[in-house]
Length: 207
Image 1 (cartoon, rainbow, N blue to C red):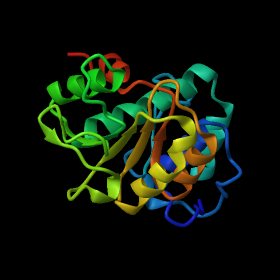
Image 2 (cartoon, rainbow, N blue to C red):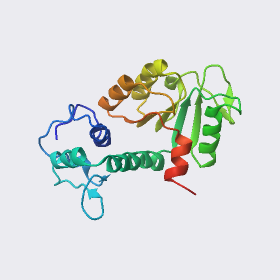
Image 3 (cartoon, helix red, strand yellow):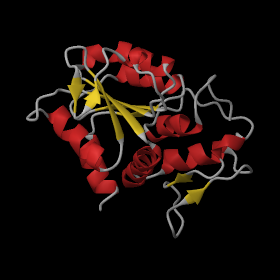
Image 4 (cartoon, rainbow, N blue to C red):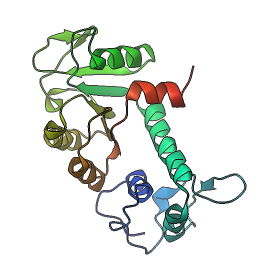
């Protein structure tokens, strides 16, 4: 498969799961697909394990033919992988007020062992952590950028996420910006949109 420059295998798979095949051009196999799991296979176990000899064209065909519940399972696998692999989460718009949803989510994630970095220019510290005015001011590596801002404010945040080398952007429940999500995927980031990280963690990684 010939991918757009810089797009990651899982970002490409997310495009396929969302039904957007226009950016995925069949061609030679892509070795970086090795080891990822997909759930559109109609076989007995419902799982396709992709290796370096599996033509991505075949994967996309399976995805296109998959029932909606299998596509949802594939997205669940992508989200679970993000949650398992992430260590540091920068939360843009994290409020210092304990009654706000952003604080509740951040507090929960902190209790689960994630390193939380508040990004809020109006706060000095949140949950015992120093708050930064923007993502580019964060001096350490960030795995996931979790966004608690209005949809129209998302594009520059995604741009900053790309610049700092984040692996994924996560727009919280109620936040949808398709253009920003498309651009993030094109640059190689994984994207979760209109989902609550707290709820997804409890659902996919129950204690």
